Image (tube, rainbow over all chains, first blue to last red; front, side, top):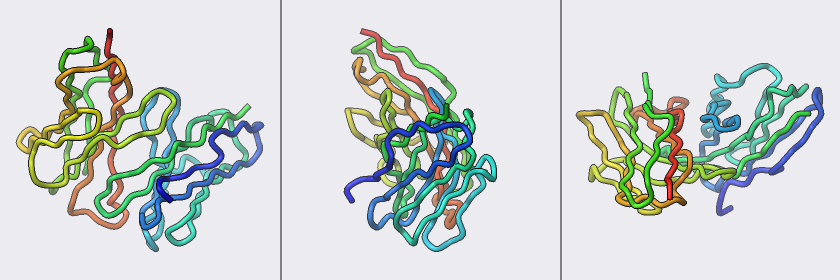
Length: 112
Length: 117
């Protein structure tokens, strides 16, 4: 597609429920990144997929967080047993070789 | 190790005055440098990048940045600020020599720019 697409744009969930966030990157972008951004804060790196290489999971905050990517296409970020501190905007980005990212509009997750 | 610093949490400037948002970096090899902007309640948008070539890079919305290798800086500038430029600005860097899982960008913490009418 023309840009990075994320869905849903907003998600309100009850504490303890699982959520799944979706990212559809730009076609041909081999790299895909997930970040978390709390209100007024910077970007917190979560996970990075590059082609067929093993993903860099070093930013995942706990084992409740996981992500998958099918080839060089769609990625899903799953948060199990959500907690209130998981509330944030989850941003996805994709890039080509030069590392310049194109970001999606994000998913605003609210855990109540 | 790669790192990037944005030494100012907030920059205030009057409309019509020039603005500068500072960024310094540290990489082992040659840097790829980027500026992104985030308007309130919006996603991050690419402003400009330095990969190679001219040290002065021109980007979107009248912004420019100057790559200074000796000072390891990549400050963002605009000759005349607009109220609509008020946003959060992020600098990012990666080492051009690194590949694989080291290719991800290293991000600054962001600088909040407030342009006063």
